[in-house]
Picture 1 (tube, one colour):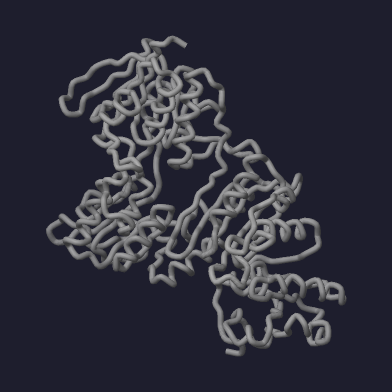
Picture 2 (cartoon, helix red, strand yellow; picture 1 turned 135 degrees about the horizontal axis):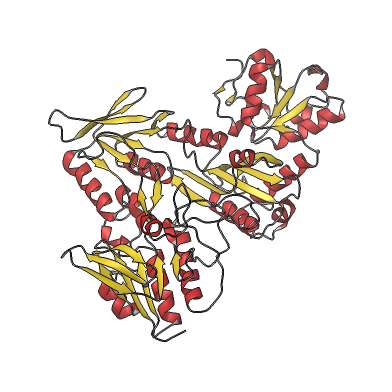
Length: 572
């Protein structure tokens, strides 16, 4: 490579600065220029909900380094060694002459800048749904530090008491918690019939929704916003109109998805997905080998162990990985980007909610032959006071037993388990390999057999025909449509607590230790659904009954703790 290689980078938030910083370290003599249409560069947008909540009080923390240095053009020039032009917009790309038309947004002056290698790191923009009232006051999107700062200021100055959160994705969950913890009553509106529709299957979402309800969040699911209604002056939004109701509010926050900023690439004739997003190869090159793209403006392929079309998952972690791959490739180092597994995690009140790989919905859409299980239990040994409950849902291919996806939710340490699953999916590992990983063990961190391994074991048993189980959703449907009965095998002192709600005549309580002696109390001509707190004993009850000639027995996955259809006291 020539020492005078000219590299122009469009975009200065995540992928852009990472590309420029890495490239300067690899190519000290390259001519590197980064442009950004905003005044701010390199800020942590993922921290915005936590500023709103009050986790930190100085909004500048999102634009400063760990030691408090502001990430400004001067910082990047002096510390990182590349030029940064803010308030500068890229208008067009001339691929033939290898120039980009730039506009200074303060002076309106237009110039052409030449490049040898061009990097498009233009990011994404919050989707603006086509509804009246988006431009009213007291309506916020949440993509920029100024959005978070002004929301916090107006909550204080205007004394907001009620908020409507439009969208139940990652940002929606985080902002809902933030506003609730600031004392506002929050209604979450989502056009789909569940929270986190692009992330979770409906059964796990139902479990999360119970937690939102416990924290007094009003859920308006399956409702489409049709308008934001103004006050008498026509200036401020005072209510949200859906296709089913009118919701009074003091403020509205909208987070209904991100759209890739790919117009510059499209106009230059670069290949893009029909639904949006610049198409890139394993080295983040576009259809023009001298033009790269990364971050929220690009689409990604799945990791090699998962089939499927390119997916659009805008995350800062991916953007930074793209930046490194781009810089390496420009510098002559062929280190590919291996793809993504759709891994994501969010904290909502006391719940941790994560996913990696495929959901069951995705597997069905792709007509895959898969098996699935849901496990529920504590993340640490039961005797540890820090032990917290969680659900794990796991999918694997019946053909080759490869792990396809994991979802997890609850108060337990979800991140550790999702990350382990993501690594197995990344390397194309199987269910049995996941169960055999030498994970760190000590009681403060987990039980001898980690929950992710236990879940893999249970799924293996199901695939091998050793166990028979039903998800909570399947069990509820079986109870509603047949004369099936439930068998509670918990101990008597446990049974005094809440139990699964059903007709007392169809509910049997026989502790596991008494089951062999009292087995004649159960009907052989009906489906029997066994359960305990987390269904470990429910599984053992299934085996005992099978050995005694009962062939219509299933245990309820996740047990009593996973049942989200309603609980009651026995006999009530």
